[in-house]
Length: 469
Ligand SMILES: [Zn+2]
Image 1: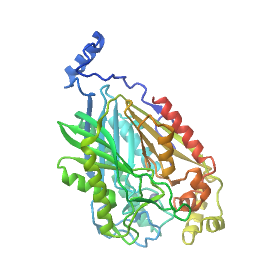
Image 2: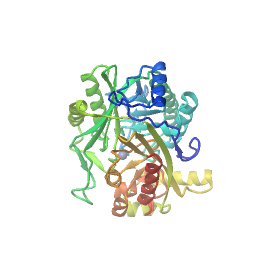
Image 3: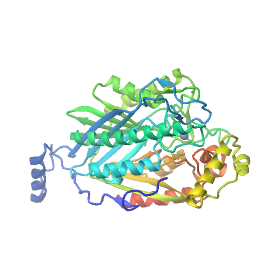
Image 4: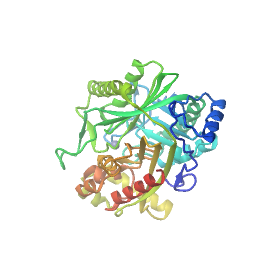
C-alpha cells in the first residue's frame, strides 16, 4: 500500500505567492503593492487589516448502514450491532491571499489505507484541482468505526461476503470524502485564522512495562476559523489512542474524540469541530473501558478547547505545502516462530498472517522489503507549521520535531494519509513489544522495521521543513 501516489514523489507548493503582512498602519505601501491590493479587493472583499484568508467547511455522515467488522481490536469476535454515536467526515478548506488552497479532511475512522489515499487524492486532484500535497486525510483512530479497504484482515475471521460488504462501504466512503472536499471548497468565504494550544491530561504512556513513567504529549494544538466575525470551524488534535471503549463495544462510536467534537458543536451552534490524532501511538486514555470514561475524557477535551478558543493568535500566509514518501526497510520477513517468540503473538493471528504472506508471494513473486510512509508539511507563513505523519506514530517523534525545530511552531499530527502500521522511534524499536514491531503482524506486514527507521523519517522531515521555508 502507499505505492502509486499522484505525480512526483516530492511536491511542493512553490508557486505560492509571498504575501507580506499589510496592516492599516503600514501607509508606505509601494505603488505596485497598492495596485495588487486594489486589484484583489476588486474581485473579492479584502480587508487590509486581515491576511486575506478565505475558508469553508463541510460535514457528511459516514456511519455504515449495515453491519461491518469494526477496526481496531483483534479480540473482537463479531461485527457491529448498531449505532451509539454517528461517525463523520469533515472537510476544512482554507485559501491564502494568493489563491493557494489547503484542505484537511478529518475522519471518525481508525485510518485510511494507502490505496484509499491514492484513489481519493487522484479524484480530488481531477475533480477539484487540488494538488495532492495540499490534501490531508486525517483520522481520529476510533476503534469503534468500520474496517475499511484491506485494513487489518489478519485480525478477524472475515467471510467472503463480509469482505464484499467492506469493499462496498469503502467505495461509497471514498466518493463521500471527494464530495465533502468539493463542498468545503464551494463554501469558501472571507475568513480569519487563529492558532494556539491548550492542554488535556488524560493521555498516559501505555508502555509501562518498558518505562513506568514514559513520555507523553499533553498539548492540544488548535486552529480557529472565523467567518463573518463568528467561529465557523475549530481544528484540534490530541496525542492519545482514541480507545476509551474496548473490544466489548460493538456499536459505532467516535470514542472520546467523537464526544469532544459533538460537545463543542452543541455549545457553539454553527461551528464545526474537526479532530485529528497526534503522535499518540504509545498513549492510552486513563482510565478507560466504560461509556462513563468516554464521556469524561470527551468532555474534558471539549472544555479545554472551548476555554482556549478565545485566546488564540491570528496567523498569516502564504501557505506552503510539501509531501514525501519516505522508504522504511523491514528488518526481515519473520517466520511464524519468530513472531511468537520475539513478540509473544498467538494463533489464530500468526496462522492468518502466514497465509496472507503466502498469498502475497504467489501474487507478487516476493514479499515487500520496505514500506512507504507519507510525510507532509504545511506552513502558514511563519506562524504555524503542521507536520502530518503516516502510520501510528509514537510520541518520541512529536517531542523530537518540537526540539529540532523550536522556531517553527510545529503542530505534529499522526495517523495521516496512510495508516499502514505502527512507527516506532529507535528507542521503542529497541525496547520491542507491540508498538516496537509485534503490531505489524496484524497490519499484514512481513516484519518489524530495521534500525534506520527514525533516522530516515527525521532526515526526510528536515528536508521538507527546509524546502517549505
Ligand atoms: Zn492504534
